[in-house]
Image (cartoon, rainbow, N blue to C red; front, side, top):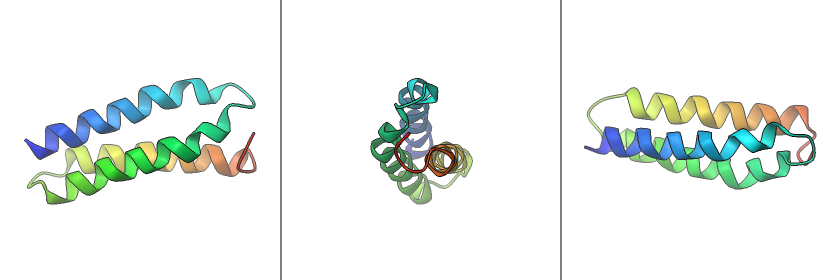
Length: 73
């Protein structure tokens, strides 16, 4: 059950991350990456790894977007 919850949190973070592809909206990743990391934390408690891994990938995408945008672009 926690694996499904973790996957849903990761999906929510990914959907929120889609508009941040637009220039000057990358700052929103500062809010989205912690959501994905919380989903990964929920996934750690689960007996399966799928939701946790998905959340970590979403968080990595957000961190990469922050990196290439200088943290705010």
